[in-house]
Image (cartoon, rainbow, N blue to C red; front, side):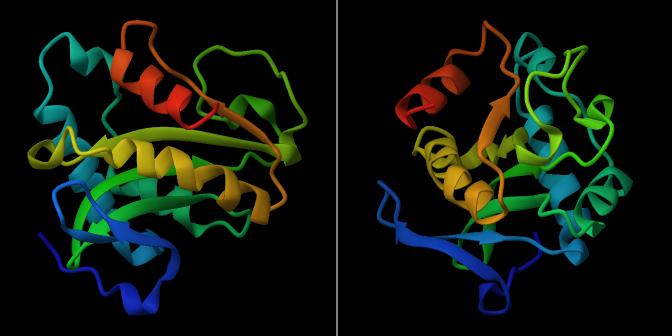
Length: 171
């Protein structure tokens, strides 16, 4: 796994995980697209067959496109000692609502005010220590700083862990 130098990144939060490791929540850059794609697909590989239905594989090209705009779309990540532990793609739609990444959903809010959390990935070796909770907690303030006040995420009704993280996050 590639080392991430967080000194060159926007840091949203610093803290200590329940296992005692220091962490930082950072905003990744376009040059991290391959690392982000690898983490996303490694996460899917580590799921049971039933859980794999919750996530769609995404390529390096997907994340390059996601990270190249200037609309505040980002990947926020939990990094500990330079190692990527968890990440979430934050999508800020522009223009056509159909490009939100949501599955077959009619427009429910102003596109330019919407922030969508998607493609949440947690390194399989680090599950169960609250990493998704950290991502969900940091998302609203990141979105608000980008002028986005309407938060959305698509969660499969069978994905209890995701529901729990969003509820704990007050969403």
